[in-house]
Structure formats: structure tokens, C-alpha cells
Image: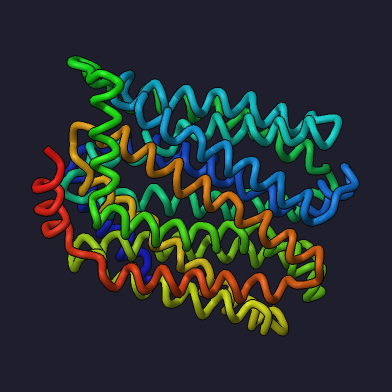
Length: 411
């Protein structure tokens, strides 16, 4: 515990030298509730299934709708960064998400519930691209560390909110648990508006054709394409796994729901620690081996899920599963930095749409397997996908080499 506290103090000390801790605090707080709200849904899926009389495939579809609509907003959100700036997008996203959670909580039928899930995905989708570029611009010397702190806050939210939901859902119901989220979303929206500085944008806007051509050239940079392919595989696997892990632990392994959601929370706490460490390590030694090791651990942990037998083994396995979250700050910092500055926001948004849209199918994939009694086989397939990601990361060039290639191909 002492070493963890020392690491946190060291991280904060490095970031304090950039003089933008209020920006980091606002962005991280928003991400805590955006991601925490997203992962609260899997924690209450058993109750949602009962309310609307749907099976695992129907429940998985709801989670896929959240991720799919989130993905669809990444490209528009990225373009808007270069047009209206991050402050409006961050604050507006949080305020609109407050409305979306009320729509989900009040849904009278399954189909209306799906519409509410789509609205939640669309509104939170504006947050992701602006979150990354805000941190990258504010902490140019410590971008991996700062993004790691931000994503670790999201992991804490992913641990805390589902854990509270699993503990309280039997007493207050899933609708109230979702509905009360409107309060923190509105409060943090105001905090983001006050803390994130406005910046001059949209001075000499490119024509649509020129912008599209430059974005297309940017996303074809070999290092960017390789990193995005790997993160897509890991996200698909992670999405499928986390959407049904609490349900699997309850229905297949026989845990009670409070224990299952407690283990789910442990997954994200392990992820938070990994994100803090990975961003710092990558800033010092480079990205390739941090990402490769993370992917290898993802292979082993996904393959080990069917072997869970008892709480202690489950705690070890789900903690190992959580470490794959370490790839996010490292991969995000790498890709954003390698993208050409002139189309950074637009290209980053397009890439996020691509990898989140594909990964959104992970929950539907696992749900379809589960309805056929093939839960364990689904996890083994996900382990194989993580193995492919590891092979891609082994050949990832350094940032300097990637930028030299970029400057030779994007003019």
C-alpha cells in the first residue's frame, strides 16, 4: 500500500509541473461517471432481463446498442473538436447524458429501453475524443501518465458504481439506480465548463474533400493502423467478457449477485492500478513491450475464466482480466501523438468510431454463445483474439519511427 501511495504522489507531482490539474480533475471526474454508468448496466442485467422478459441475447443487444451508438459519435465528435473546441463538447456531453440516463431508467418497454440505451451511447460518445485531445494538449510532456490517471478514474467508476448497484438493486431496483445518475452528470458538466479552457478553433477550415483526404491518409499510417487493429481485437474481447461476467459468475459458477458484482468491481480496481502504472512506464521506456505484455496477460486471463472455482481463484483471475485496461492510456497516447496535428481530432474520432463500432459486437457475440450453453467456448475465442493483438503489438514501431513514416507519407 505504501508503494502505491508513493507512486500516486510521484505521478501527481509530475503532472503538477504542467499547471493544469484542474483540467485533469474535471476530465477525469467526467470519465468516472461516463464509464461507471456504462458498466453499471451489466451489473443489473439479471433484473433488466426479468423486467422485460428477454434472454441473454436480448440483454447483450442492449449493451451492444450502448457501445455501437457510442462508436457512431466518435467521428462527428472528433470533427467537432477541430470546429468548436473541447470545452463545449465535454460539458455538453455530460449534461445531455444526464437526460439520457433518465430515459433509460423510465423506459416502459424493452424497445424503448433500447432507444434509451442508444441515446446514452450517443451522448457519451461526444466525450471520448475530446477527453483524449484535451489531456494530450494540456500535458504534452506527460501525456501517457495524464491519460493513465484519467482512464484510471474511469476504472474506479467502473468498480464503484456496479458494486453499489449490485449491493442495492435488490432493495431499490435498477431504475432508481440509473435515474439518480442525473445528479453527478449535471454537477460535473458545470465543473468541466469552468475548468477546461476555451481555445481558438476553426480558423481556416479545410473543405470537406480536403479534410477527408487528409484524415484518410492519417489513418493509413502503418503504425496507426497496426495499433488500432490490436486495440480493436482487445476491446471486442473485453466488451464481450465484461458484459456478461457478473451474469456468468451468478448463473454458471453459482456466486450470489453481491459477490459477483464485488468481483466485477475488483476487475476495474486492478485495471485502475494497471493504467496508472502503464502510462508512467510507457512514458519512460516506450510503448511496444508494455502493450505486448498486456495483451499476453489478456490471453491467459480470458482462457482461465472457465477454470474459476471459488472466490479466491475468481479474485485472481478477474484481477488479471482487469490488467488489460493498461493498454488504453498507452495506446491512446501513442496514436494521438502519431496522428498529424492538423487533423488530429478528426482522425482520432474516425479511428474511435471504427474500433468501438467493431468491439460493440462483443457482447452480442458472447450472449449468442451463452444462449446455446457455450459460455466457456466464447471466452476461449476471446482469448484467441487477444493473442492476435499481442502479435500485432510485437511489431509496433517507436513513436519517433512512426512519426518519420508519417511525415514521409502525409503531406
